[in-house]
Image (tube, rainbow over the protein chains, first blue to last red):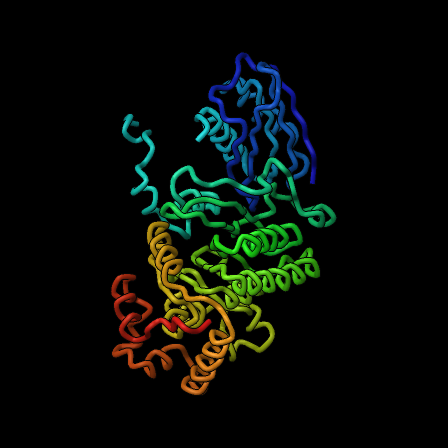
Length: 105
Length: 312
């Protein structure tokens, strides 16, 4: 297992009012993303535990692209990864932001 | 992509989705009345397994089981759902403790039934002792809850089936509903073949696996009270029916269950294959059972075997 951590400045606050959302499962080639609205409005943090070691640079690129595209300000993402491919990671992160943008049930 | 494609499906459409394919969270969300689910010890609490990191294995924030309360057609229920894709839905220490706690809460309150969505290969090998203890604790908690007057309903239709200790817990429930894909057994196909040889059980013979452990056979021999088509809606209707019709629990129930099982052993003990059992149950064309669509199978099963309401 390898732990990775990324901290970015976001252009704007992530939409919606939900405080927490979870998407995905931890399985081979899959991951879970827990999103929590716990940070100042222009900050974004990702804490990753991954079963696939040595892919820090790929994560760095995927995360930078995600923050640029979705501007998830105020959100902390905690990720348990079972060795998902970058496209699956991007998809789950986008799903998490989309869930947070929905209003509380 | 048109705008219509982006709109959320209606509840009716959503409930027509496959129970087998849905995640544990989606199953709970779609089974219960909309918006009624409240999770206990949710993923934000990060109550993960204390064992997996010793094996350098990834954790899941809910340890592969979701527990909580919600409403079923306006009435309160406790609900638990195993995620069959995380470590095969297997029971570990935290996973098991969450289910035990839910059942003990139900026992205290006496009036709120429990619905368990099994999806498990049994005990997690990496935390075997803790997992085995969890199975024993859950079986005790199920029986104690039932003794206190709580109905405990099991729904089985996930990709991991209901195996190992999960099969034992299912056997302790008040009633079960199962789909064709939802296999129920203790030892799985590979375990039997490894221990007793390929002559005893060929785990690669999928047709053999389905007709020995699959939902149709379990329904026909009385191991499950209801057979459900593989949709969330069908499981919701089955659960509502079982919650309504399941009788209380006492020494009479256990005696009736004992004689039901003795009778089963006496009638089918010498059968070599599930098809022989179905034929002995006077199913006209026993060999055609595996291919029957769900609605025709339910009609057949209701004719062949009435549900033993006084047993379990």
